[in-house]
Image 1: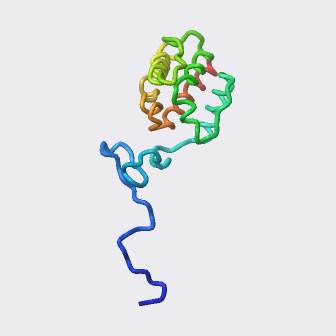
Image 2: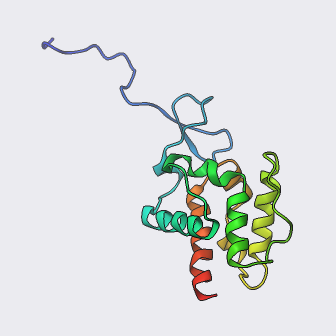
Image 3: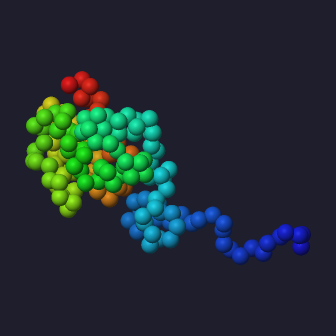
Length: 156
């Protein structure tokens, strides 16, 4: 055998791509570790649009956004997106914002329900799903919804 030839062991130097049991998204690495997902598998992200949305949220809520890798946690409680919506369209929220750590589901549902009301009147296909933000499954879809609101409030 030639010098430097390594015996084939059947193991690849590249990590294994596996899938969830419900075939929803691919995972990286061991099947039990679902905390890390490849961004390019989750969906394409438009960084310019995301920066514009984050800047818009900072402007209307007067709160500074954290580092890029913590944006999901920042939005996950639903408080920030409800404040942004209420500051642009006062009185549109169906319920008051609940600042409790455990009220994320209620806040996000309130946001989604309020976004379909007048004067915003977003269609269901323009909205993200509750799990997209709550479980951070598809932050790109969340950003697209927020971008739609940002563009509509420019016309408001």
